[in-house]
Image 1 (tube, rainbow, N blue to C red):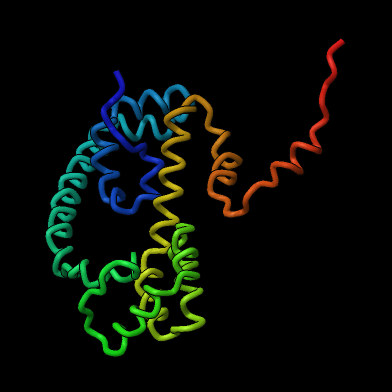
Image 2 (cartoon, rainbow, N blue to C red; image 1 turned 90 degrees about the vertical axis):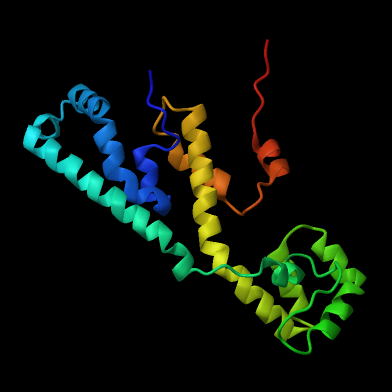
Length: 208
């Protein structure tokens, strides 16, 4: 029976929100960790985990860090206060009804964007960052405000996308650890493959 964990310990290096729970995971998975070290002949680590003093210290540390994590979680609202998301609806879709926003001289610009059919076609392609880059040519100040909001989440999106791909690969092909490098590179690449070129370079094997 496998323990009911959604993320492997390896993933905690990628998903920083779970990093504080590593000690708890190791403590709860002690038997499986021991078995893993035994199968791989890691005698040094095997003996360390079996040592009662070390195990007691691990339990003590995991308990301390669990309480610290709870305290930090409670203070998230203090460090990151809630914002009125509806004030930024114009960034996600400027072609909807114009909302009341705090900065001046933007309602007129938003009205111009809303009636620009060329920008509407670009928006419908689905790439929000690319859309606002095009807007910057005519409305640089408004586009700058939008891009400043969007760029705050670019790095977290890349990390979460990589984690999602890795979780999917590890779930479907858990028995093979060597497929991650090549398959993640292909899955996360922003370069579209030239299918026609790949197809034409493939040498067909004629059956006789």
